[in-house]
Length: 69
Image (cartoon, rainbow, N blue to C red; front, side, top):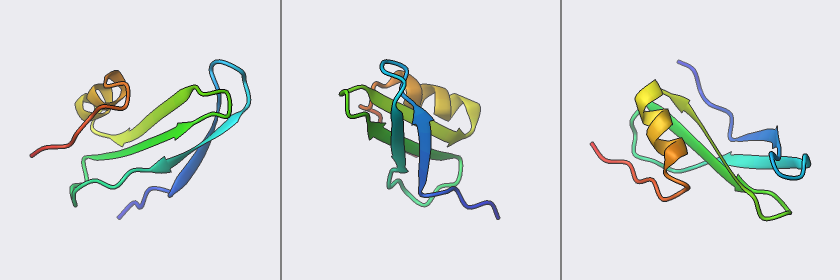
């Protein structure tokens, strides 16, 4: 079974510095693995791996997403 990495690094969309995102704790479901982090410039970076509809909902949430079954 695929295990998502605990951290990922992206380029900040605002200042182009490296921003590290960490996997968020969620229930024991396998259809989404959300990540979040904050750049040193203050820009929030969200990322997720999983089912397209769950990923889209997470990215559109501005970090206020909660997971429910």
